[in-house]
Length: 399
Image (tube, rainbow, N blue to C red; front, side, top):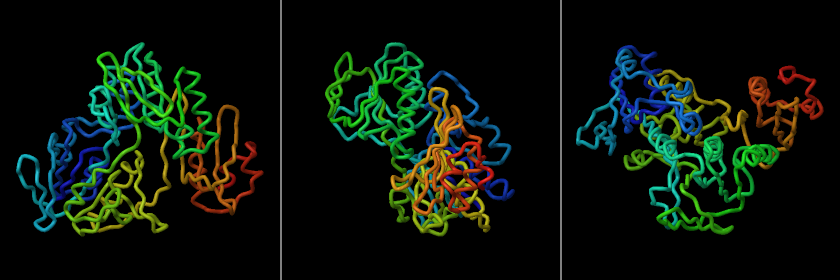
């Protein structure tokens, strides 16, 4: 029995290791396009930019660990096609590898800017270790860095760059920071941190063209012109689902799967950010988070072994900026009624639906409340506003 895993990122590594724990005899091949052994991506926009070579969160194992687990790790290997009819994958060097089961864990790539001048080498994205090292090598005191996008990655890079002495300007089309995942009151807090540190935030600002000049980039925006030495584009990600699409596997902004990672082809599974997973509500959702790459492979590995552990975790992700930790749980919707629960410098923002049930939460420097809030959201029971607003009532009493 041979399982081939395309993609040696976090989701691919986790699938391989979990599968080996469930099946001691299976042959496992893990194919990675990067030359780097598998690693987790959260430190790329923080610790790696600040010069830490081996931060704790990188989770990069010695390559010999894969030999010990009898996982064949093939790095620098690009897969160019999948033939589900003959159950083979085609590598760029022409070799064809047979499989009994296949896991596509190709992740996502940074979304590019479809405007003139965006192909200049001073226009960067951040998705890989190579990207992070290239950006880190160029960040220096006095450098003028423009960041396109005030989402999680863009703001983490802005925070790191300002700490390194760069002059940072963030250009955001929307009207506030991290608008896709936090309510307005949390956006305001995050914006305050950045402005206090010297970051210039420009909202309602669309980048329309880039004029590469010898000495700098001239950026044309809906709010005027600015000059920058570097531009980091952080406007989201695009799933690497082309291999699946070309093989006739169902895709829709990601590879469509059930809750166990099965695709429309019985031999093929998808893991991590490339998967658009069927949720208990019946909707398919694609998550661009550490959590899905770390935990959804549990469902995939079990399904490959004939058992069921459907993935149905509450969505969760986090960001660290200027010494503050922000954790985001559950749903974020403009239709929720957001309540602010302050405990000194610690803050919990709870999103209630029309029936008074907590559907989402954002925590600032208050991670200890994440566990009781997960239980409250999972229980789905209406709770009184006064008790939720009263910091003297521990959330664990409301579970």
